[in-house]
Amino acid sequence: MTQLRITGLTAAAIGAGGLIAGPAGAQTLDLSVEIPRLRVAEYHKPYVAIWLEKEGATPRTLTVWYDFDMRGNEGTKWLRDLRQFWRTAGRAMSFPADGISSATKAPGTHRISFTGGSGSMPRLSPGNYTLVVEAAREVGGRELLRLPFTWNGSATASARAQGSNELGAVSLTIRR
Image (cartoon, rainbow, N blue to C red; front, top):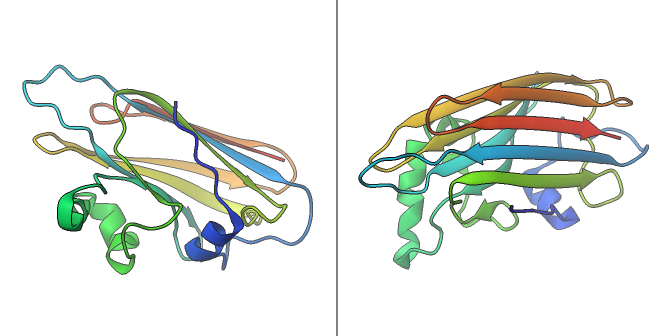
């Protein structure tokens, strides 16, 4: 299991416009992303990008898993294989992105939590959102899951999707 905490500085780097709400209680955004174990001759861990889209706002990248340790930052050239992410936000980013970039993950279920509302991360304002998870694997396939949800700012929201090849079960829960 992998946990990633977003700091206030990272939240500022991500950008807050359109996703920030006014003062109130803390929010916790919990993600669970399954990378399935594939039985193939040549297996490579997938590159994965996860971002939030809100109607009328700029998409916000939450995390990107890629081979950032390659000599000469060579791993970034394969980020283009995350086609939707690349078009949405990737081409405008500098990598490695502090607090966003992370190593590729082995098969299994990976949990990520973001806490906001108390200075560590901007809180989500009420509205309709879509969590997008995209995976691409060398000598493998690509997959994109969209998890639409509505956040009213005071209750919980959740969404779930099931991948078919490069991604397994993906779930999201936001609570106050």
